Length: 238
Length: 226
Image 1 (cartoon, rainbow over the protein chains, first blue to last red):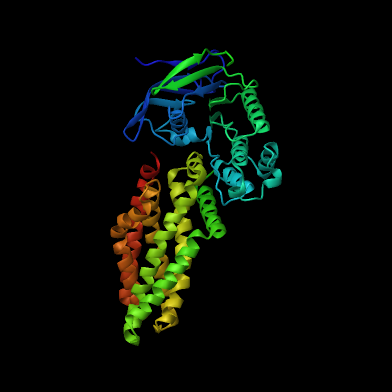
Image 2: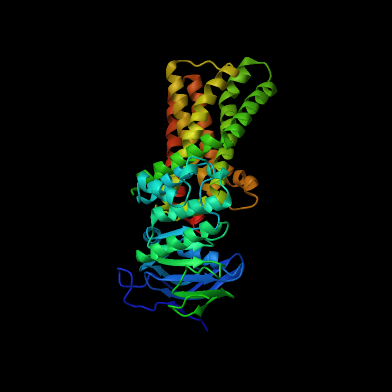
């Protein structure tokens, strides 16, 4: 039997198209011979923040990559803001932004050049916006240094700057707190709170249990390839 | 965001990366220099033999250098998950392919245009006229374009495989044989000063380029979307 996780406590707060921000029905995905996602059902309304928990290798990254259109589902249906993940992938990519564990930047380019590429390829933001994003994440002084000389935490901050610049409708974050110092973690919390205030939807995979500033609408856990609702919508994790 | 801007942004990014890291440049220059010198010694001192071997040696050096450059163009993308990030931008897969193809082609064409006069001088091949320079440049442009089309496609296909260095030439060399043969013949014709066969080989080269461009461009999303 497939379990259903719904993070949709306020049906009034929905995407402009009238549907949920993301909707997965019976999504299955194999990686090699292993079935990582074995029938995922998930519906998240626009403007919600959902935390995705699960042990290492449970499939959190696979699920996020699938929602970012990097992986195709092998079965089931999936849509983001009403756009099918497979047949309307380009439209989906226009509305989602993924912050990966490694930060996703080009090591040989500078921080500023990496954000310049984001601006060029998304059509969002300007040089001033990129500068503001770099300042916000505390990298203004390091902006012209090649990313290969950044620490892991700085790479993560640059990834966060990219998210701020893109400001997608659906924020997908894979372990955004990893490698960050306490200031960096607070910065992530602030950015997520602000994104929510702007009506953005957030799906956050994290092992962090005690982020006081983070009050998710729901917590779901991925185990055995299936999602389970841990904390009901509107409940803060403790 | 239109696709042309995306293509140019991706190509610029790839060229900038290569300019900074020189990862492919060092390897390809060293390889091509070694190939030209070793072949010159192996072929002996007879001027006619050296001159007639020039087109073949030039393209052997370019082909092997091209494999290294194409493989490198995806390796730098795969570090720190940057390629994953690139593929989540709202640009078509065709634009990503064209951007990488443009960068690989420019790199190979410049390498070929630098290498050709060096090879001609080293092997003592005399050019019948100034027009021959233009024909050789055209052969290099069309040949390197065809080669880059296939190399970019197969470099993407093998980028995530463990044995990619071994698999890339094994998979792509049988496919690029017609392009390399036509390029060698066109270069040979340009050196001999016979315009008619050169035109035929250049047309054939353009035909191969067109076919490969359509096929590889159309199939690219299958190799990058998992």
